[in-house]
Image (cartoon, helix red, strand yellow):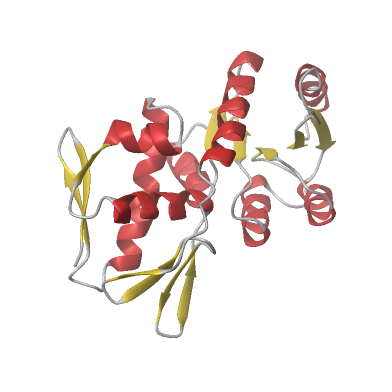
Length: 227
């Protein structure tokens, strides 16, 4: 079986060597020291997962993640950063990242995250399905898009899978643990914060339709209320 191919972008040569050396025991690792060269490679090659430093020359990690997401909504993205502010983590997640590890990190933890996301990327790929109506919107899970009139709103793979789960359980309480385990493969705290970001974005998309609500059920989970 062929090894999974990882795009790794880090401008600290020592850290890049140590991390690449460890990861190459399990994966094919393609390393770049700046965001521009990494994105040029991403446009030409297929990668199974991306690991991005935030502070990069020429194109920083946030800009790189946004550019990657414009071309590919499904590939998992992990940020590695010395920036510890909550705002930076939230910004990364809003760009469609799957996780945000703070430096210094352990190689064991990074490999664990990689395995979770590689397995999850196979689990959450939407099955062949037809578009469905929710309020005044049409949701096309196969193409990760919500349509209202002439407007098309693109979703990430995870957002699309989350909305599909809500619609399949419409007007029914979904426990946080169930959502996290089905879509993230784990129910740890930080994945819960990631889920909250995606739910917040879905709420903003539907905010102008009063017939659609994603209700927070305290200490239990969420419920999609829709006709």
